[in-house]
Image 1: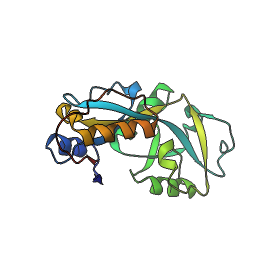
Image 2: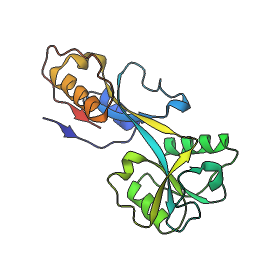
Image 3: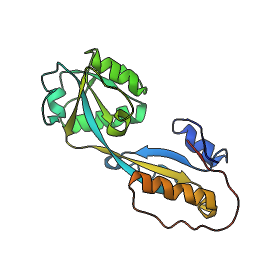
Image 4: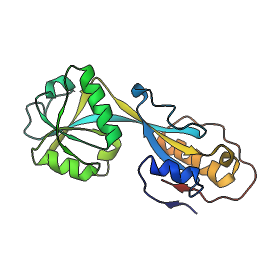
Amino acid sequence: RVSLTEAEPPRSVELLRAGACDIALAFHYPAAGDEEAWPGLEVRPVRADRLVGLLPAGHPHADAEEVALWELADDPWIAGCPRCREQLERVCAAEGFAPRVDFATDDYPAVVGLVGAGLGVAVLPELALESVRHDGTRVVPVTPPTRREIVALTLPGLVRVPAVAALLRALAEDGGAPPSGGADTAGPGTPTGE
């Protein structure tokens, strides 16, 4: 049986370390050098998730094939969670500007609504937009290209639990990640995702 509990990092990682769940889904930005954010945990890749620009439908760059982030330097921005905002600020700084963040929320539908109302621009994970109607907005690829990596985390000993190993394989296969060699031996387990 698989059950799901939603928790933001670092809480989801705390739940995993405390034994309250068997698997936690998380993400990191490879360009930020935060791959080592989870010492002592087994990290399995699930999928890469490209970040894209989200612009109001009437924005001058709304119909562009792509937009350079520096072209949005004078726009108001809508930012996400603290880690996502740090990444946004880091990428924008490399492009020579600091984004003026007028709104901050980690609620993707709220970000889409704010952009659709013409209150700013945003950069969101493409995966987040798959499940949200984005009326009044345009999705535009951004340069420089940025992505985040979605990973499954578990405790090293749990990869030998058949149910945990099976869920890790299923996550990797569904996400398009290359299969990794987790052992399928010994012990009962009920995987829970964060």
